[in-house]
Length: 192
Image (cartoon, rainbow, N blue to C red):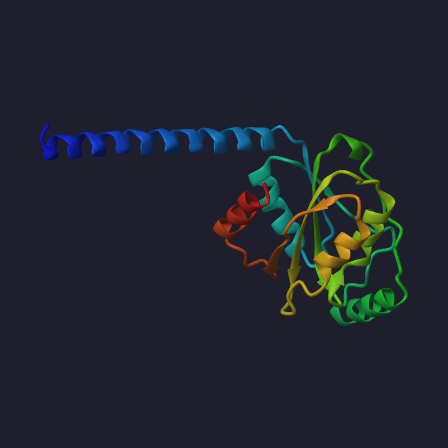
């Protein structure tokens, strides 16, 4: 056999092996995605200004999960400055407001997305109420938040502290309502 013939066979063999590996890898990825799609998801959120609600609805469209809005029995003031002062006092006293309703079938969900605005460097008190009132042991928790300029601060670590027996994944942070669909999709892919 001449050298060119052997070299040609090696190139063809290598190409076949590479194509086979790529096909096997793609099948593995698709199987993993199929397994994740079997999980029942719930998107839970509290929103004061509407930014967190808008993000929650965008996540719901992409995940096809159920959605639940956290609402307090006593509404917050409509004045921004009053809300800021009230939130500051509530954080200092670890206040947890009473909620209007609850998720009756929370045990049916495997994955729970929890959304909150960032208030005084952490989650809104209503979200703390929701977390402490619901048994989410063993569930996958995927937090997300919106902020007005201060970032997530300790929001995600505080959520994780309240859920020590859950798997808390990487959170998503959005300035007000400016997250792109691409950013949301990439984050959702990264937490599967």
